[in-house]
Length: 441
Image 1: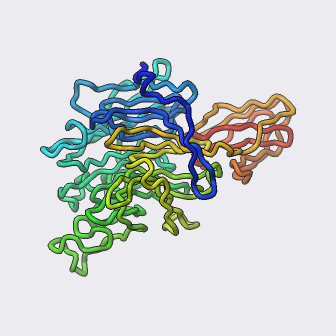
Image 2: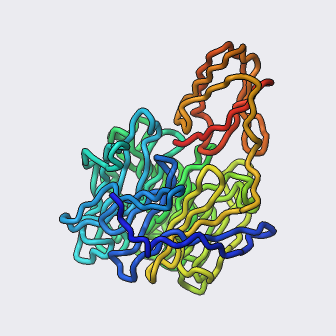
Image 3: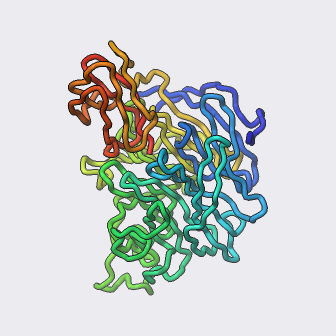
């Protein structure tokens, strides 16, 4: 079902800006209203090779080809508001979508409310989400609600929860934690806590991402010091005793030699929100960085911080703040396989979803074939099938910059497990042909 009027969808006009030495275009795609129940909160690149986002009680899909917005899910009579979206890691075989909802009337439930994680089946024929199934819920009592979701490269669903001074040290408690969840809703056997939790001691984690080597990072709003945390298996990240590396609550064991916590890999005074991983040469300055949306506070004036990781992807070696003050608060960010960056800007004013891209990016090489060569499904999740009218022989899969990532030998028909690849654009190559394909979830 179409949702937005033509007036809320912008014409394709470009603002020209720069990210380092790269000239980028910034297009406004979708406009929203000025009140809290009209603010989008999460944006994800996903199914149908399109942009998904949440707003009010809805989950929507924006078709980047036709520039139309469709409502896939609406819960208008439930006093609930949609927060975040994630997709089943093998979406082709399991077309399931995970959505967090604040059940207390948006995320200002100062009188007490609940967050809930639901699973839905995506009906592509009718473009809607069906078969709502509640997986879990947790309490929140204030603006901090958590609820940011991410599909891990390891096949799990990750979720953030907020604390608001609940008993964060009780193992069965879901508050102030990063959760790891099997796609069927069960507790993963690898969780050493025996529960969904893989870490605790978080104040208000706003973003979650898993980078290609499996390391998990979360952005977190501190009381005075904001954090980027590398999540280690069931470690304590300090709150409410520590804010960053500073003792915040002297009555909560800060002076105790037995109190242990894990320090952030990065701290600043710039409240972060959603985060994502960027791996593309379309905008070289962002390649190999975690992109953090910044909320306008403490003089940071919103924008996007690119946090570059070291070679082992376990520490931040540099931060560069882009678009500072240009579009006010940035709420969430996602990246498409061709290296375009989609962001929610002007949060809590009159929000806009924008796309940032390099108009001169040359992604990979052109397809060519000296004979009939078919590759399917495309996009693909875990496997691709290749059928050729001639002997394939030696083949390789390369990244957009030409780096060889996989290789092998084949006859006329082969099936290749591509689960080790991160989401992105790749090329299947033989001496007689090349096919471009998308790894998506």
